[in-house]
Image (cartoon, rainbow, N blue to C red):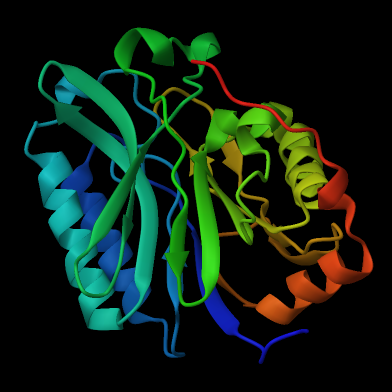
Length: 261
């Protein structure tokens, strides 16, 4: 039996970034978020939204990670919504590409990027995570992941009846076709909404980021897509997922497995 429909309104913030400048980026995103007039349930920011995809985390003050977390708590409280995004974070002797999921009441959860991007040397500068994060919020189960994780379907596999896979990224133009294709594939194979939020613009290293932030439904239909700097608003519904899985119970035939680190 399909329950009363639950709706979730999500804001995807597709933006350029100030290179290795957390203060400027927090100020910029504060200004952008003030422009959101509609009631929003979830805000999604890009990967490393306070610095860009830097491989010099030692150049960032150690206190910036905590300052960004406090900023996210303030935004979540003021907007009465949840907020996602990853940032450079130092804990003990290690740097992490750490995603925070912050609720309006200040409760937060963390996910450390599992698949560090070896092509850019991320594995030499950031410690890899080892555990997925699944968070329940307003009747939906979220699984947030980071950029390069998108290429690894086993790590993204829907083994916990999640409703939304969410990828935050700094995904460059030369491989943007892979981004588009894999987001759609992750939606179809997992029968979930798949949300990808990429940055836009050119970083200090000369890498061009074309956006392509997108949302696909559980059958792979494209709901929103953008190639310019803007805020995208999309509404998703629980009934859409439940009805699709009832009519097409493909997940019941999925392979059973355990992940080994």
